[in-house]
Every structure is written in structure tokens, then in C-alpha cells.
Image (cartoon, rainbow, N blue to C red; front, side, top):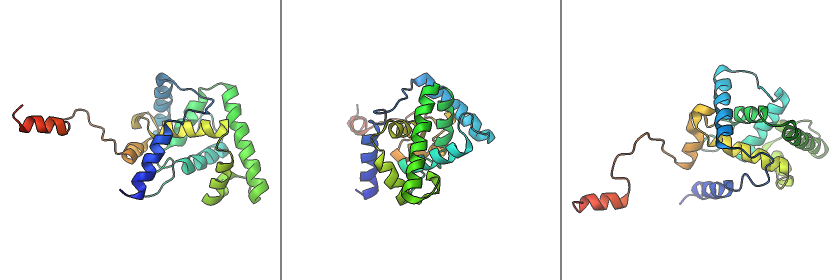
Length: 193
């Protein structure tokens, strides 16, 4: 088993904890609505509906560190930022303020630690250092949850562009499966069953 498979499996195990620490609790209808709007916005190249250009750059950079690109596409290539933008458009001002406040704190850390005004302008190692420092915060928990939700949503709803998230985990989206479905079925068929 390769190192990539092990790290991906570890990631997927830990992604079940993504909702922990998040100030957003999404229901399936909320996710589907946000995904649908996100896909429409991405396809039309629209401006963001709730994020400023600066916030979009910042959240996109954070997303790219949560699910980075390596030998496969990451959150940036999957268009997760459009999913985040549309979820935030439907959230309360209180939730948006948690994220804006957390982003301002992160930018302050970028300035005080590296003398750079924006997180997205930092090198990856510097970004990782700052994110590790806030890993247990409500801000980071919420962003991580949104990134994971956007990465593995249905592609036609936004995020998961070109099925990047599904390819990452080896999910094969088939409308119908042809027998035999697994070892048991093949064995059963071979024995004349």
C-alpha cells in the first residue's frame, strides 16, 4: 500500500469529524440548494454572492491547504470556493461574522508573524504553520467542514468539479451496477446459483 493511500484513508477517517467544531450545521436540502447555486455561478463565471474578492482569495487559499493538490486535484481544482460562497449567502449574519472575525485574526497573524497582509500571499509552509495554530478554533472547524462538504458534493451542485472529490476516494458513480456485484455474487454464480 502506498503512502498516498494511507494518508488519504487517514484523511477520510478524520473527515467524519469535520462537523465537530463547526458553527454551521447543514441539512441535506441546504447542501443541495447551495450546491446548485454554486454550480450555476461557477459555470457562468459570476461574481461571488456573499464573499468579497479578498475573502474569496483567502478562503480559497485555506481550502487549498485543507485538501491540497498533489498527484490528484484538491479543493481549489474542485471549485470548493463557490460552494462556500453560496452556503454563506444563506447563513445568518452571526455565522458570517464568526468566519469574518476568524479570517481577520488569521490575517493579523500573517502580518505579525510574516509581515504579509494576506494569508493567500504566504508560502504553503507559512500557511500551514498559521493553520496549525488555529486548528482547534470554531473558525477553522467551520471552514474545514465547508471544504469537505464542497469537495464531496454532487458535481452538478457545485464543488467537486470534474468529480475530483469522488476520484480522490475512488468512488465510481454508476447509474446502475451490473452483476456480479462482489465476491459473494461471483462465487454464487460460478457454483450455478
